[in-house]
Length: 250
Image (tube, rainbow, N blue to C red):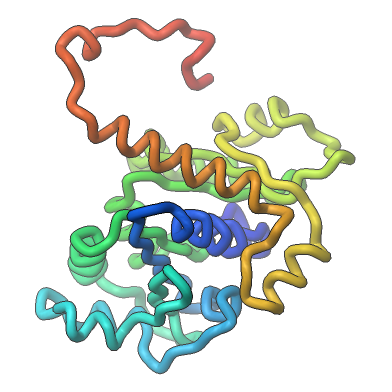
């Protein structure tokens, strides 16, 4: 989820999806839930005549045959595209939940590229998500909006699932990462470098951006390892382990 439009959340989503797709025995879906300004098809240099609204309209009748007609496969990645911008209400939560339930049965990794607005569709995805990745850049307007989103997510009882990603970090960074953490109110889980030329060239070609490769591959592996750790049964004694304060979230 972007702190504000234009911080590069879709770029991070696409490149992390490519990283997941290169892992052995990993099936990946990226669903574009930004029905006003989704750019996933542009990031992957593809198009499709079916979209997210078509998929959710199936409800519980969604099956494997219908699914194959709804998605677009690029390399080792399945995409559920947002379609052309539209005006109207969001998709009801029950339909979003049914779509996510179907996707989880069929993929190891399901990513959702969200808009920066809290509409009905976005809230449904956030509530069903295992992890919410809030993307910002180091600029003060983006950090301010990231902080406000953190406060709102706390009110919605979603704060425990939120992690902060800082995009477009350069050597001329005016705020340090600790200062960014203090401003937003979250620890930084990942940061990625700033190189407009490299990223623009990659987007035009519909391929991963080399400048992001190291950070997103490490990030994707970390997410999978943490999810596996979370799903692993814990021994009785581990349930009562004490963690030093310096390792906890501030």
